[in-house]
Amino acid sequence: MHGPVLGLLLALLLGTPTNPQDQPKTRELTAQLSAPDPETRTRAACALRELGDDAAPALDALIALLSDGAPVEQSACGRRWSRWNPDNRTSPGEQAASALVAIGSRAVQPLLRTLKSPSWIARRHAAWALGALDDRRAGAPLIEVLSDHEAAVREQAAWALGALDEPAAVAALVTALKDHSPKVRSQAAWALGAIDDRRAVDALVQSLADSEGGVRAQASWALGAIGDNRALNALVPALKDPDPGVRRQAAWAIGVLSR
Amino acid sequence: MTPLAVFVRTLLRTSAIFIGTTIVFLHPPLEWGAGRTVTVTAVQSGKEMAVDALIAVMNDSDAGVRRQIAASLGTSVNPRALPALRMMLHDAEPAVRRAALASINKIERRVSRVVVQPFGAAAGH
Image (cartoon, rainbow over all chains, first blue to last red; front, side, top):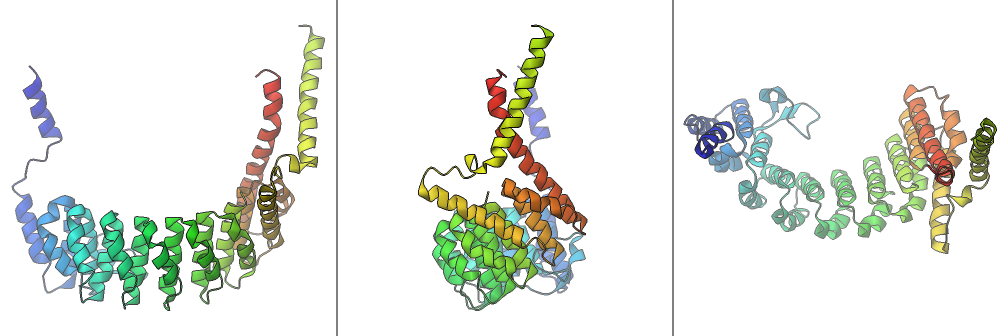
């Protein structure tokens, strides 16, 4: 008897009847994604991000924007939305990646295609978005990206594989521990700790002798995160490392492993 | 029950706790070195070695490192860290002192749990 009434109430409360004003708004923002001014492009991508799934009509335009690395003040988006810039800068491409993550699994296939883009900026942003989307389909393609010729892309792929918690990536990440870019080595060490796979222990122990302090610190962290007691002996000398960051991380790992 | 009986019982219970504490402190291997096989003992002695290594560098020049050492000694919940942690309570850096205090509390909670539980159970709680 109350069925229809309750249904109507529920529809009013929970339902999102297609708001006729949503579509024009998405269309307007999509148009702004190709504005001449990078700040306008960034702001449009941020606004689309707030729409989440409703921004799906803008999917292609957002994918196209991924290669846009024009530096923009972070305040353009009203709040701090950027992940890797110590200098308070963001870019339209970075914000487009965030908007694509907000759209969700529909963005996965186009992002996988972007991993083959000629623009390294687009590849890097796509790798980040795929890691953040946490979709299993991205595992194998991201492992391939670990041998990208651009270090910034390899670094982002290593991060994404750690975020995906992809056990199939362990061998490739172990190889990446020998990358010539310290940022890639450090990110690979982090990913191996996040994936938490004992096969990585020996390689990480070798990374404790890396020439870069940041890599040694990250390897110490990973050994603590994996929690294999075999690493204890190797970590003790790191307590005397010249870099305080390494000593701190080694002390943490030793505490965890001696529990 | 007569007051005398209550008194004697309380006395016995408290002294049991004291004796228990003494036993655990005098013979830490009873609890922490309780290796039944050679491998377990090896792992265990590796852990003891690691705790000693942390204690050896407790005067690191970097306060962040000292704070982490204090925290890690608490994570190890190994009572052999207690004397070092008590010294760290006098560190110049407040964060180090806070971490040392938290770790001391953590280890002492573990010790008292180990000691009190068997006797509490025996007394019918």
